Image 1 (cartoon, rainbow, N blue to C red):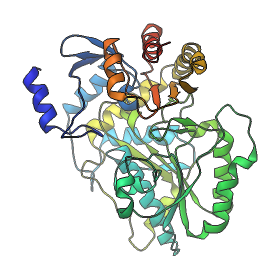
Image 2 (cartoon, rainbow, N blue to C red):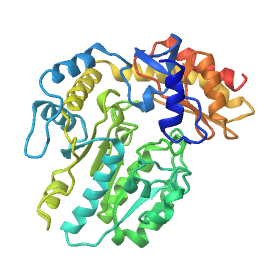
Image 3 (cartoon, rainbow, N blue to C red):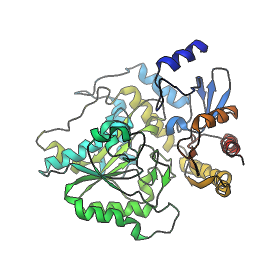
Image 4 (tube, rainbow, N blue to C red):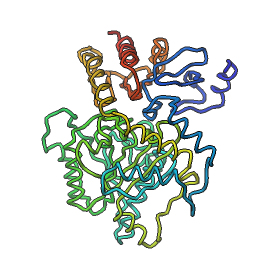
Length: 423
């Protein structure tokens, strides 16, 4: 890559959440290996983001590379309408095996946002098939479920990413976010806001959608497992479906294979993505119960009305199959616990800093919340200078590193955070 490439990029290529007229700097990466990103000038950056939480095995992993190569030599893609193939069957077999027992019907799609769209449509079509007009979703403030229209409609309405579209989106029902931290003492009154809402609107609600235990892009907030248990009980009481958006939390990130496991509950519909393929390709899965799948299938339409062009893409399925196997065949829980303990040791003391509001750590997630919004562009420059890749947002400086990260590389990330906040 040369300077003209960077100029072209700035002038013609849109990047996530950026302006075309006043683009922020982008940094050229030409290779990635292990837990490092390698810049065009040869500088190595320790990756603290796992490429938006997806690359749990790091980069250029020989097992995942081989899975792609072997599948590529057979076929890169074939339509999923009326056809099937071994890679899709294998990954779905694994997902049915490892997700909570009642979940057994898998819908493969392209991305996390689409998985949420699929989940919402499943819930709505389920009630339509039952002859009930339930067209609203209940969700939590500070939640984030994606950037497509259905997903935006169940994201926090005060979220600056989506507030522009308020008048265009379906209106759903929001309740205050959980106020009980993961490690706080539990009190049942934390459920009061949602109990009051359900007592009034339960006959209108098709489903509750939430991110279990960790509210991600809406603020990296961790809440108590008993809150999730309480939601499951309320859904059972009122006969409402529960959708768990495990796109960010699935596959070990919080210290359990799925965040729902912290509360020992199962949802009626679960959304998976991001780490599903180890960050190699885009793929998502929406998994539901036999009862929901049969109810939808026996309804007026006679089928579920969704079918992406790249549904069940063989390359994506093959690498997802390899990624899930690789995770399960290694002591992932011990590895994530080790990362958690190191993050606690190295980041938790920052809570005493006058500019730090809170430090939150759970599994392979470390969050430093500042008292004031940070200048993300300036901080990224400082992080690059220190040889790390950390992308702050709002008031948050956080890391979600690949599980294969060494203790030395993890310390490099935490030391960089200390330096940028002047510790």
